[in-house]
Image 1 (cartoon, rainbow, N blue to C red):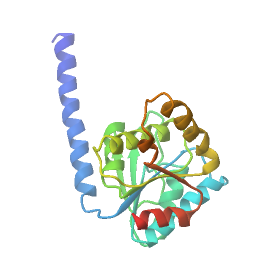
Image 2: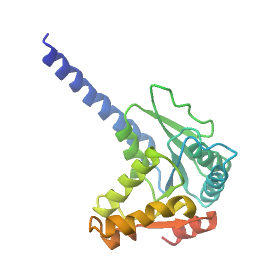
Image 3: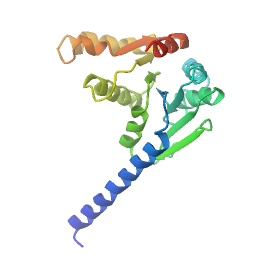
Image 4: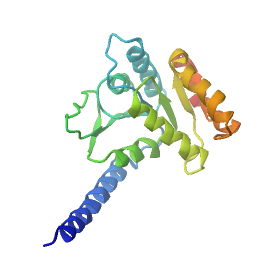
Length: 210
């Protein structure tokens, strides 16, 4: 078998693996009616104020009837799953398989595992009634950008995008306004997709009002 044919066969089987991940995700999550996806850094520990804030937000949302969905890992994801697990609604983790294996946190009523980031990202976005984004790094920024684009282009229904932590996010939003908007690479309406808050009560109010 030539190298070209081998690669084609390998890629063809990969397509079926990707399809299988989508089917599994859809089957497992299809019955969710109200959920909130929470994003944030895997590096922030229990000593960090944002960890405790994520836990409190998730607990209040869970008690209000919202399933909480996270990436299933440590840090902010763990905090959100922990808060949801202690609440009245489901706590779901969408874990990713990495070379340096991500350790799934223990606060999950339902735990799914994905090989591909883009399949996992679809599942994190598809069923959400709102997105709550706490401080994070490149992964969190990637997820935030994807969500904004989907709403901006009307590929996803308009739901709240809530950034938690004014002091963390204000520099990014200022750059959006002073650089992107000034250079006409975004519209002023795009900025209306995002709300910045600092407290769990503000998060709950925005989501319930929506």
